[in-house]
Amino acid sequence: MSLLIASAPALPLGTSGKYVAAAYIVFVVLILVYVAIMATRAQRLERELDELRRDVEAAKAAGGPVADRETEAVL
Image 1: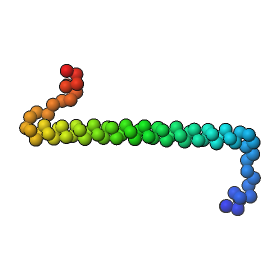
Image 2: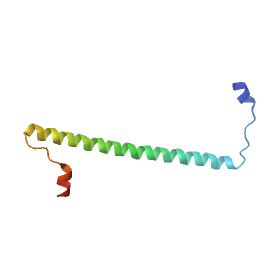
Image 3: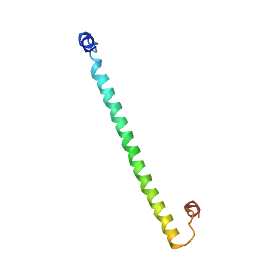
Image 4: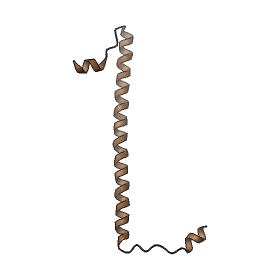
């Protein structure tokens, strides 16, 4: 199999090879930026969830009613 690949002629790219490589690099950079943005959002959501859990646990420990944050935000 590797002998077949080694003996196959390379595709002539001519001057367009640089543009194809640049397009792949731009594509990979865009994917990496997207992944970084999604990771940042996931971390922020995780922090907010932890804060909500602490608030609920603190309210339960205090014996008071658990407030609805949506209602508080509207008021």
